[in-house]
Image (cartoon, rainbow, N blue to C red; front, side, top):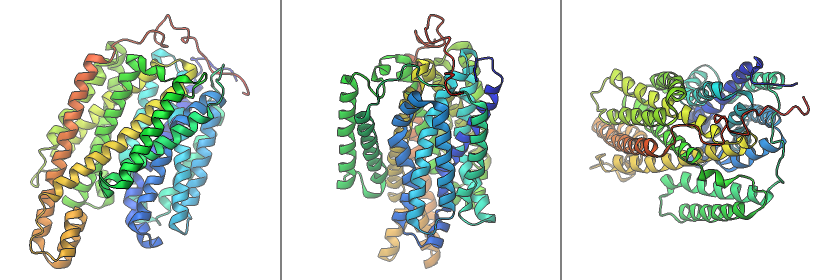
Length: 516
């Protein structure tokens, strides 16, 4: 099977990729609404529930760099089919698991499938689409991944209302099958025509360092940033990653080309992607709890009320792509970050009397900014990469986003916890109830109901809004500063040597024909 940029099948292949990344997006958040049910059905404690969530995140963060490089070497279509197979099989195993250990193991394998698919799906676009169309393709995948994350609570809430808890995993199986059939039939193979020798030590160091670092970051809000486990894991991760960088800079055939960071377009587009992810995950960390605990909606109702965020993203991504085509990457990325900053800054004004209409308006504004910035930022990353290194290069950006997102949630979670605990009034409560009330708004509401203390619920609601405002202010400041830096430092035009540059030797790149 030969392929060119004019092959009409590439749009159907893009649709299959979009379905796959949509599933990956909602699987990041769908677990959250199912945890109480799983805890009851499988008699799982808090630690086990945390690992059901964290196993997926840890494996993705630890293996994306390696998987992106493998796609360049062995073929991206092949890696996508392997990833979809692993994702579908492990989803079925999780759905019918009879113990917490099996669910955790299955979630880890799902993470491996996701670690393969996320960077490789974006890397495929470099071989499928020419410079004039790539922005549209990137914005489509960005919308799929971005929509999937807030879609998780909606899908999970509906399934839990009508089926058993395993249905939140089983829904992945037909999607994986459909995606695999479509990719096998429609997607041409593409790979680096001159692959480097396998960098086994680099793969080991990157996986160990990233896993340790992200584990420490995930554990920090619960254990505390000064806890020995937290400090030890983060320190070990940083030491190993330093060794990884040193090795990659001296080995003849590195797993990833760290010299890519010398290109301002790659560097600042990657940083912009990380900071947009920081803002999006900050929103998705605090707003669902506000809607559920303060506003009193159930899981499905909470998910539905996140739809304005999705709507903003759907409008923002293609708008950012069109603006980038006319004015270069700098304008939509910096403007999107500024709109995100404005949206969350307005959100910080939310109080107990705020209507849902007010909340929906600032959520839509923030979603618009996320879409405007994220799609052009990812396109700028791909544009700065030689086509044959699209997998490993994209994996760098996706890994930075995953790690930065985990760090952002940990930092913002700590800020929320401190802001909440400083305002909730536990005077006169029994010691055990006071501790539960200070730990979380859920604990406070449960204690207030059990003790017949409605004033505790009122205090907890006000305290949570204070903590949420601090998080949104911090997110707004971060996004605002990022908008300024991006406006100053992100190149406005395609980088020299990119596929958009007519002087580039990579411009006529086509997919590899071997084995088709």
